[in-house]
Length: 331
Image (cartoon, rainbow, N blue to C red; front, side, top):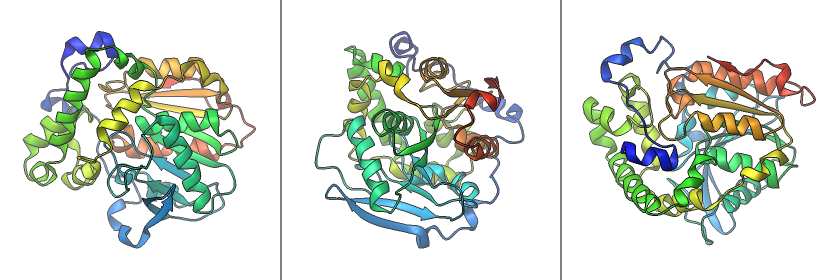
């Protein structure tokens, strides 16, 4: 996205040259254990009707820990969590859904809104038998939705992980003509991502298409990139983008009373790292971890590191204040 948009939105910035990928560290793009490739995902795929529409989701794992729901971002799909679900599923039931209007889920009957998505996730959870508080893990727009649930459905969330969550600087896109340009640019990017087969076969194309999402696309395996883009080209994309820019909950973030872990990439070009500071300032019980040389999807860029952080955070007793884990750190 062109640099002139950045002062208005916080979006944009420098892209890493391909040669810089060699210095990204051993954990960047390294498949987490247990590997997602060893799972028969088709055996764990299901569909359920929520609010009169079909919701596609994956359901895997069991254990004594509270269940976890993974919520993808704009243009995403449940496969955005392939590197993370296997690890967490060792100790708990894990569910990851395609939000209405994306990938395998039908468009909703009502207009797409962030509050509406929050209601849908909660109703989805109740429909599949989640009667006790659950842990929510959301990336980008999914983080926006998870935080919204923390505000308006206080009995549903036990702990929340916000990974490069939208909801702060995105509201500046309400200014026109910036919004108009952003819609055009985002739609063009979404269309490019839909060229999945070509992207897998052509590393240079993969680099160009994913450079604003991943800090070092050349370090991302082709099969993971293919799965990551399963939600591209979905009919809910533009309505969901409009919903992102139309909703401002900043003044209500203090109502989030559960512990929150913030995980951000220092070089996030879509949701600037300064947004993590604002979330931390406004949410009473929040801890922030910044991963260096990392972009908008830390859970896929540095999955082992991300998983370690999340597992430690979710293992804490609910009565343990987040600040007792550790001070805000850069990793």
